[in-house]
Image (cartoon, rainbow, N blue to C red; front, side, top):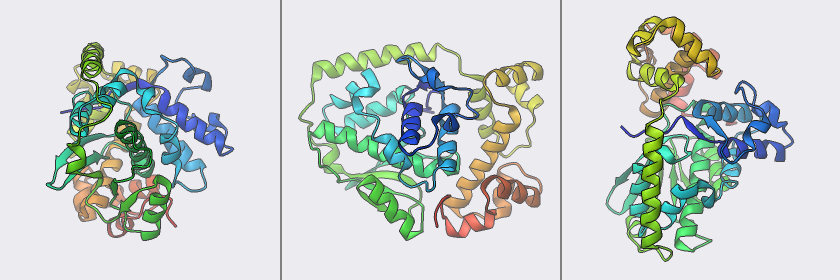
Length: 344
């Protein structure tokens, strides 16, 4: 199974902080509960975790008067050349299809917020984003940022600054909300879709790219392989291991002792490791269960009791209380409306 790296460069968080500053929001407020300070992000080799980046997005969505446009603004601060050798490999590929496959093969080198798959549907190619692990309040930010970043890459590869032949698919059914997202991104956005995806014509994906350079492309791919091997040689963070373990066993009633056993460590050691990473088992467990529940309600439309059972709650009433406290809306309100956080 392909996965994102938990460790990544600080470019994404820097972009969020810059957006906050542009809006008159103190970047220190955006960094709350991350264990980071602004000076921690200044070095070119500064590293942060996926959870820290997600927390900054949660913070800015909470602090901003309206969540639409935040992801687009952050995405526009991330130029394709800021992605290093991974970005150059994508830019010098012979076709968009080859570039898309390369991005899958080296997904761990990206700074994306979600995993994704590429599906060929005949006349259209879909890049389907898996928002399962991402908190629901960050979904709009993520689809906006990914759309803008993808547009910038494609415009650079095609040498076509005005390219906008991309359709963004979302599950949102609020027509005004969908149109506002479209205005923020600058392309067509389709609501009431099965999930989140970027759609392109198949002909475009197989079109030879004018900036393709076989020698540079092969060199960059070789360097990406070296970086991937180096990254795989490093142990995952404990918060990442715990989160994946919870999601893999989401229907079970887990506790820290059980998860520690699954990870071949002691409860005491696991608590200490998670504390060092500025989180706790309780936070990871609650967030994973409720985020998965929101995803199931929003995308599949399953009954509330069914979703409660699927994410490990024995009592639907307990699930409803926790869900409502976490998102400010009941599971029943999410299920029929599919209306995202922040819509009016």
